[in-house]
Image (cartoon, rainbow, N blue to C red):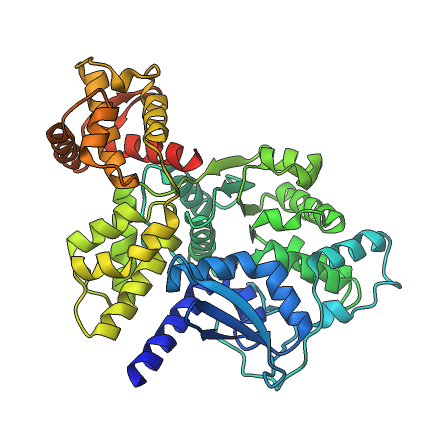
Length: 496
């Protein structure tokens, strides 16, 4: 029983780390660190909170991230439920914007003041600001005893970033921006979750601070910018807010998409951007989509963003995933054999957070069973996660994705043609069929032109060899490395 309880504590700790990674450190500290408890059950996890407001807020705002974290920590079938326990006393600290000795603007954790504010006596445009406040849905939580101020964590650095084909341009752009502040402004880095956007944003700020400690810099989320702006309407006032943000040498704003529907905040951000641009200062944004797709930002801000440098970040390729897994394992203190690293990197392909969740689960399993990490343990421990992330894929889906990437006509893979331009994509399709489906060897061979099961086995061996090769192969978009072609096909399969 003691071992089971220890295992539960480790898994809940892993869930908390995964959730903090998903929602961001600041939001996690505000809404989860001391305001919510997690209890593991036979079917999943229960989120225990002190009052109905917090229950509804977490359920409506973070349910998706909590469910994703639970699946990564507990398995594909993990459920999430919410309970109220008034005995939990969540703490509250007021948000402050202070200037430290380094000249850096640091935004502390959010407090309840926004939800309690009186906006009726504010400046013009207060109706829009009130709408922003409602959109932010910031409401008061009970006040607990103050705690000691925390030391800001060390920011992620460029040398810790694993470079791959899908993020090379974004990395080079961010590095150039940090080395020559103001030369590439505004810089917009966009891409799906977990691909390294925030890492690059932090790296820009980190390098700028270390290279020019005398400069004023701010690393802030769009949510924090909104809250700071709204508080300025009834606190220190807009002049103070504008001095803090318009006097910066570097402004880095994460998750720009959070500003959807916040007209007053968007207007203030446009004026802030204009001021910094006129003075040759540096501005960097991240978003989950390109500015062209963020129509809710309005034409004024989108046009300004389009006038800078917009770069995308794609999910990591195989080599990048191997590098990410190795660095994460080192950070967790795991001895990760090469074959286990390859297994994890080949199964969790969407983003780095998947890899993190898999490694956290491996660490918990290694401790629970008191055995070193090896391939059998990884296969057993991660089986649920792998099944949970893989959608139902048909042989026809694989055939279509391969044909699209390699520029082949329909049914080419089922033909008797033996030229490399068809036989190589056909072998890749057979390899993918073994990875993504439960079809038997004979079924796969029959589908792809009536071939024998031994042909499918041979194709598997051939493709496995290509994965370690730098050989370029022709695709519909031109010649590229095999691992890049594989990544494109797998993305096409996932998109359906």
